[in-house]
Image (tube, rainbow, N blue to C red):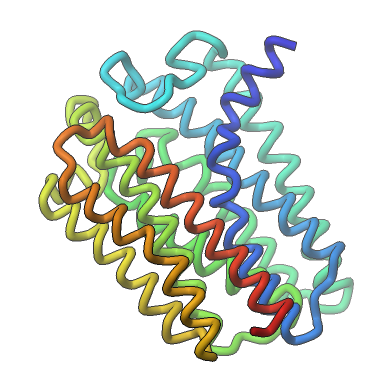
Length: 299
C-alpha cells in the first residue's frame, strides 16, 4: 500500500486536470457539430492522462539522475530525489507507462478511423509516438530539450494544438481554422504553468545547468513573457467566443488572472510562485469546463 502511494505521488495528480483541458475543449467543440462519441472521448482522455503521467515519471527520473532535483529545489520533493523510488524502478515505470499509453493510442485511432483510413491512422500513430518521445526527452538523456529552453514550445504544441485540434479532428475529420483559436489559448495557458514552474526553480536550475526559458530571459523579462502568454490566451478566446452573455461570463471567469499577474509582478521570493502555479492550472481547467457548458447550453 505504501508503494502504491509513492507511485501516485510520482504521477503528480495535481497536474492531470491541466493535461485533459485540451481534450475537453476539442470534445466540446465536436459536441456542437453533433459528432461527439463517448467511447472516443474516454479513450482520448485515457491516452492524454497516460502521456502526462509518463512525462511526470520521466521528469522525476531525468532531473533526479542529473542532480537537478536537490535540496535547493523549491517545489515538492520528487520520489527519486527523496529516495522513495530507485532509478531502476522509475525507468521500469516509464517503460510500462509508455507501452500502456501506446496501446491506448492505438485503440483511440482504431475507434476514430476504423480499418479503412490508413493514412490518417498512420499520421495519428506517428503523433502518438512523437508525444511519447517528447514526454520522455523533456529531461531524460544528454539532448533533453527541457535543458535547452525548448520546453515551452513542445508544451504549446502538444497541450494546445495536438490536444484541442487533434481531439476535434478525431471526432469530425475536419480542420476548420477557427479551432486554432481555443487551441492557442489552451496552449498559452499550459505554457504559462510550465513557465511559472521554471520561474520558481530558476535559481536552482542555473546551478544545475538547466537552461529553461525563464533562466535565459532573467526575472524581469520572464514576467513580461508570462504576461504575454496570458494576454494571448485572453485575446484568442475573446475572438473565438460569440454572443454577449458568453463573452461576459468568460471575462468574469478570466478576472482572477489579473490579480494573479499583479502577484507575479510584485513577487520577489520564488517560493511564493508555487501556489500561483496551481491557480493557473486550475484556471485552465475552468476555461475547459466553460467550453463544455458553452457547447451544451449554447448560451
